[in-house]
Image 1: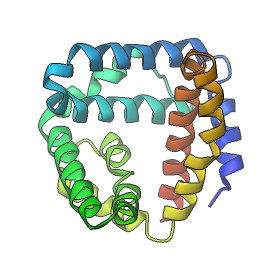
Image 2: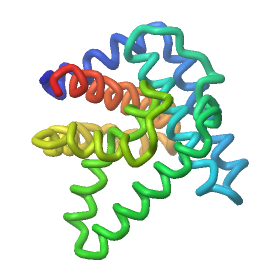
Image 3: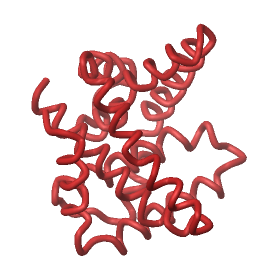
Length: 185
């Protein structure tokens, strides 16, 4: 498994020369999410799937286009079910205490990447596969997330403008984590 520093370096290399497209796509994501906020739970799953599709394509050096952010709507039912199940399961684990909820969210974290690569997979199967993939790898993902904490503080000091660069960087790093994990599991 690659180190987090390597995953982040790979993300920067994937984004090299593609920052404008990545920033524009995630701005589109925020705009669409905001426009659909009255029906947010219904749109959240498909938008997360679309974000995963775009991020994986960018991380893999494949053609990454703005429209991919909406590709999750092609698998609307399963992406919605996945979002609802992951949300419910995480919430139920959070009722026990915050730590089990964090562990559960890490276990389910690969669900939408799995669905992005396997468009015919059912939501429950993707969740089970994510849990299996994350066995022994939750700590690394947790640490990867913490590596961005300082960057997040800096982005907020720019009144949020730095988020335009940070969000694609984080998303492609997470896609790289999935790609590496998928190779080794």
